[in-house]
Length: 557
Ligand SMILES: *[C@@H]1O[C@H](CO)[C@@H](O)[C@H](O)[C@H]1NC(C)=O
Ligand SMILES: *[C@@H]1O[C@H](CO)[C@@H](O)[C@H](O)[C@H]1NC(C)=O
Ligand SMILES: [Mn+2]
Image (cartoon, rainbow, N blue to C red):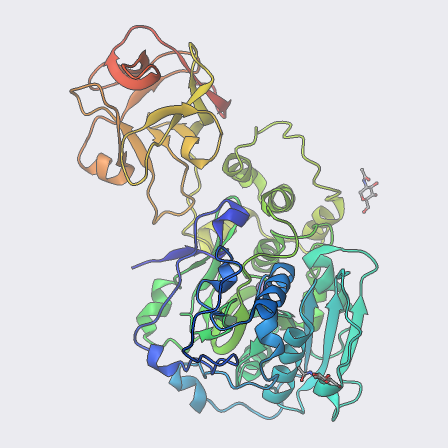
């Protein structure tokens, strides 16, 4: 089976669906839950001061009230359990989440040297210290040139005492601090600029590397300097900091450019060796590359602001401009999945702006798919995407391939959305305050509902005369919901479009902007009628001449 999983965890933050957790039942016995620092004695339960805080759902039963206050305050600041981190050994042991085959690989002594860049904004000191400790302890000494800390203008920069982590290797740690917040892209560039080793690994600072993480990355880059590689991230739970093994996936995205994990190619699966690197359409943001090659292809797009899209931009550019991307399962990094990120409560506006920038520079005719995914008009969306002329020049200078090549050769799972005629909310002209909406989920009865223009109300009309309701999926393996007239009764239904096509349900509609929506098979119309409950209802009936409008028209229909 082919899996697609969104990578951002909490939907309140992003408006995106939840990520499924990827549990590996086969290997879960490998994973030792680390001893909890806070002793769990069975006593009279302490009163919970924060019953609604995610931090205390599964953790912290035995904390005193003062401890709860401290832990909650730190959690709000960092999005993870900094209270526990401060009380956990910096050199704690981690489960070895590698495939057993990885442990027997022989790597030559003369691998390229590595500079490790840790970028951060408002990160707990003990978390950064633990990252540094793990890198020093688990990277061959003769290969580790330096660790570069890039502080993107954190609000509370602690007076750092790094003596616990650096005693034996003076000069190993270098610091860069931005004078104002410049975002993920610029942070990565700042680290790259001061790096001196053959290879640069750019990581988040809320990570711990797992034994043997560097060698497989360095070996791939030594074999081919144009390969940009990513380790596999295992999940560190934000509350009790235990490590959960994740399966190896490729890194992809949807047309809004939200990141997601997806299965490697059938070729990779057929090899039957999960320790082998797999080709990936994109990267998540944690990666290693030949330092000079990364410079030659233009580093990260410095015009990106704060958060989002920069990883997809790099992924597309690497593929189009002469390189490739691989995820290397033998290289593993335990990464804290924060409950919330320090950049903004709602990441969507940041993401949208950067996504439009990627679309403008790289996507050619497929730029419209990004606009459709964000439900923006094709002309004059009115958002400021900054100056992209330098990035367009870069694309010319590097003689990069057209985006179509990427869709045909690299990311073949993306649906190209060629057949769309119109998109957006669908409103009846006699009562345009209400929109067609997919209705209750689970369920398959579309309704009329107060307009909010979120995914449940996004509708599409295409050249097959299908009406899709409730969002449009970006990947060929996924399916949309099509409006169907069951032929009797007055209730409209939604059916999986692929199934509806197979079963030849009545799913084809004559529709022109500002006119009736009439089923080709039954000749009945989608209309609204005053219901017994005192509201307008969405129904199918003998046509009475009602008209509909969809927000955006791609091709006149
Ligand atoms: C690091 O060292 C300082 C003193 O140099 C000490 O106060 C602090 O607790 C140490 N941090 C950890 C996490 O061990
Ligand atoms: C965009 O940047 C280029 C150089 O990078 C500059 O020549 C051009 O004037 C800028 N355009 C605008 C509108 O600022
Ligand atoms: Mn992270």
